[in-house]
Image (cartoon, rainbow, N blue to C red; front, side, top):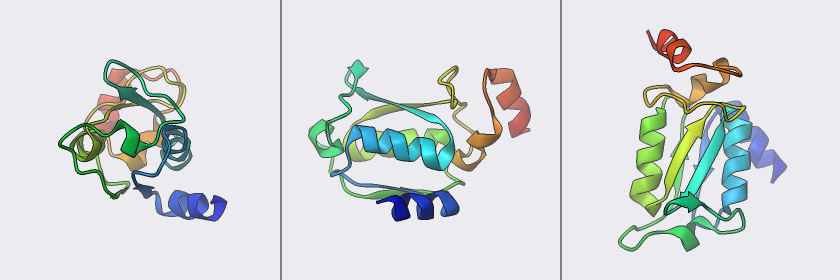
Amino acid sequence: ALADIIKMKENQSLKIDGRMKVSQLKRNFKCVYNATLRVYDGQKRADDSASLSQLRAEGCTGGDMTCTPEDTVEYFEYFLKNLYGIHVEVATIDDWVLVLDGMPLGRIKEIGKNATKKKMEEMLK
């Protein structure tokens, strides 16, 4: 619901569960962290209408997770890989370049468009 998204944006926290569709995950991620989330099903981009449970790899438990602004891109990607076996990549809002692994989710909004790895490295110093 919209109220949930507003609350997540205020707290800069993102709740994820297995019932969530890929399209919803990408939309919420963009709304909360001002970044593009690329979601993959194996080597190809995941179908937007698939739920995370449907994409879950064998041997992965699934379940709920909540991301916070302090979590790094690397941690977020690792967590989704661990929980669902889903490969994701975090890119800048304009989907121009991948965000550095060490960037906290809460700082991605500071990156802006046409960003470079060098600019992000400067931010992390």
